[in-house]
Image (cartoon, rainbow, N blue to C red; front, side, top):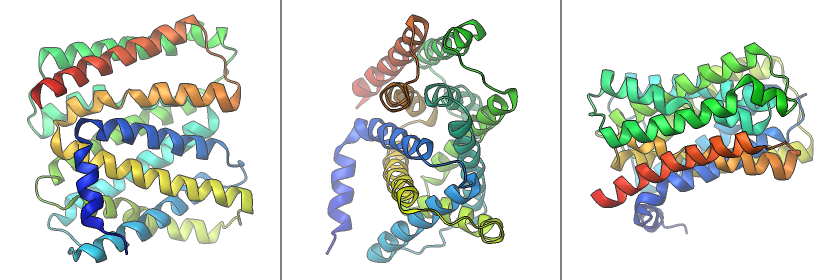
Length: 296
């Protein structure tokens, strides 16, 4: 029998590394999405991801005898809606853009978190954190420079870029709701509402336009569900213990992971400008992480 309590203790013992693990597992999720044939619609991938995550989370909730409905139902539902929108946009961007670039655009969300955290949860933005965000943002701009993209022979439609940025904005808002909910809700209830809302809202669309995945696609789909569940668990635990704006800079590491997978598995080109941008992103992460280590 799985001892959920012992697993939780192990997760919490990772302390400052929770968000690093979250970035790694989310990057593996993007790898799975990229490997699935385009005949499977985006909304169906999100549906399957939600179904697997919901099954796992409800099992844990049942083992821990937690009230699955939570206290702040309106905010929990909002977190689910924002997460669903973000995931649809992210999956669309991954499928229609190089993995390295789609990951970079997605990870513009910390700048939006910094704005929203000040607006909605009154978090103080320190000078060190602003410095870390600026460095990471400069790195992202270097990577997204039009000349840089042309040098890498990338052709990206404007609609794909806009949808990717919409995904980043929804992700930032979802982070804020998770942080606010973490003060009153069990982490597994917060995690549960994301796939629950996705499953309910996407079910009619999926069943009307059903496409049966083959065995190879099914393996990648299972990977999406498992890696996202692991990433979501580490992310929620990490956000529970850190300010949302500060924690978000650590997740810049997914840019590095995504770039590595793009090179290794999809033969994406990486030049000196991309490396410079990635290094600046990593530097911003190190500055933020060092601050967290000192405080802990």
